[in-house]
Length: 191
Image 1 (cartoon, helix red, strand yellow):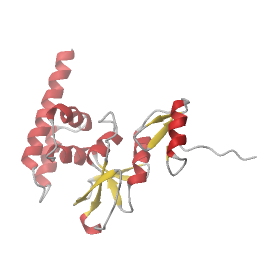
Image 2: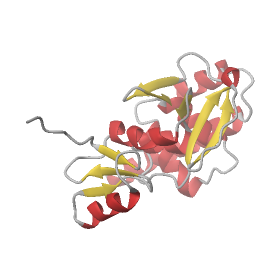
Image 3: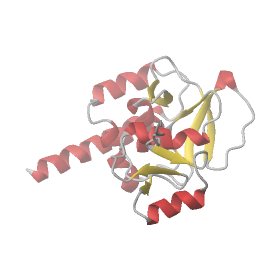
């Protein structure tokens, strides 16, 4: 007899939401987000977090901003509404109940894939968060420093200088600089 193996991330497409929450109460699952659940004995890696966002992605959509930061582990909790995008050239009408959708212009190298799902890179994610009108130093400085752990300020500046038609570039650079300086100061004070 063949045994069926459960996926590491379960959503309403696998089981009714009530059964998923019941499995959480039984200690078999833990919630990753409001609509995705992880087997309790597995770590929440970028792969599992990307799979948790998949149900709200339409065809040709990608994960960006706060959801991308969460997938990379720079945010501790999933956003209430996932942030997803579609390329300007692939414009379509969408209706997503658990996501906000933006139309974006991306250049080659702005995305990567996690578990076969397209997602903005750590650098592009940091730049988009830093350019956002919703930016809050209290909430987002740590996110920027986590996203940019292995990316220096020179690379950020070069990326922004090469970006054409990207509003808020100087504001983004100032916010990224402030976040990286604050992160370095925290590291020095811990020594």
